Image (cartoon, each protein chain N blue to C red):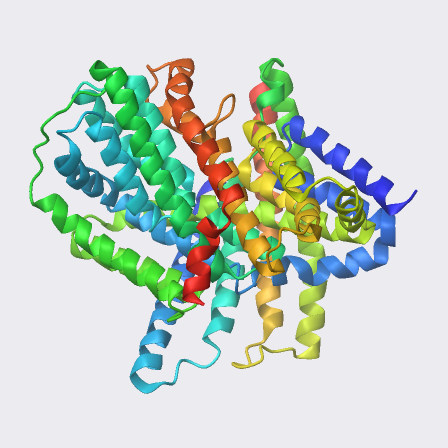
Length: 154
Length: 436
């Protein structure tokens, strides 16, 4: 269930990324044809990449795509390695929860200040709020992977 | 405790956590956070974390990474690598070792579209490895060729490692991409020389063969060539920024794939998920490195280490060689991306403080290319060459030891190339000087 939520979120992030790439192409074409590009196109790319990168994190965790070094632990018994991995998943969940908390405060302040991007005037606060929500999903994904390891051990 | 003591303890703790299988990005994030708090206290850290994760990911320079990953994923899923390989195999197959050379040549071209060595290795493991074995090539040699060819994914621009280097050291990505080209073509030439030498000594391992390939494989090659030339040429010539080049490349590869009917909905979906996994992995490491490096900067360890080493009186080339040697050792046991991000905050100020008789910017660019070459060596050298593992995961019947024996002559060629670029910085800097 959670796996498919993470996958849908990752696909949505991928579509946002493709959309940003298309937008840049249109902007370049306009620049050549009319010497006026889409104003603030780079700000849209920044927001799109930040949102899609956060959307990718829960999926990456569910797939165990994060790099770790296993050179020094190959001789440990499998249950011990699983235990370590479960512990680190739990730590990752705490870190993601912390990041979500801090980002939510950052988002609230930015929304209250009405901070917008320089050229296109987009409200940045809502983009930060979106990343905060996805950090919550990341924390849930990390807890789920920890739980999978614990259940396998029993 | 002084800042440098805290930083040393932080470094040790981080390495210990990494050795205990903690994901590398998380280990940097955690020790960086604890170190940050212990130097300046909790309130500044809480305020730092309110905006940093967002603003780091919303960095325009960084946005080039997921876009290039996307472009590479579309290229990979649309079967470009097998077209490139077939075209090259038809041209080179009759020579001794010709199919191995075809892998190297096709990897070089693919490297101009893909910025990741693991992706390049994986795609040629599927596209070329079975063919080489079918034509009677020694399985270990075939696997070694694919693993070594995979390093061209990062040696040829675009290159994820170079982008990360540019961000970590605040250098110009375009100039780094320009500087990488001549050393990358040298790598292609050296690898082909090694293959010719191996094929002469051991003719049974790499027999000359005649490869039937239809005209269709050329139809797959030319659109890819055009895209690569537009993207790399456009970035070199300043027609567009790297982010714009990557966007154009990603959209162009998508259109080419759809037009050739090799990218259906299922393949597009796989490409997007692959992009998600790779980007997520890279961005977690970038976030960890950002926090850890802020902590290091607060501790003043990098500046003090740089002053101490630069003032030690050793000749600059000796210090540089020592650093590169350290990279080769680290690269043998560590993930290359994390290694670069972890060491640069300390190594880069050291190198910048040394006098090589070059302007500061040229030293920075030259060092970036040297780091790229040692990272390439780390990707194939025993005991932990990531590319060799990627091939071994697909060629399950070939022993790792046999593969490493076949990799060694290529590593020797890489060391010669590294020495050449150390002694003649102009190999990296020539194109930068000509184009700017």
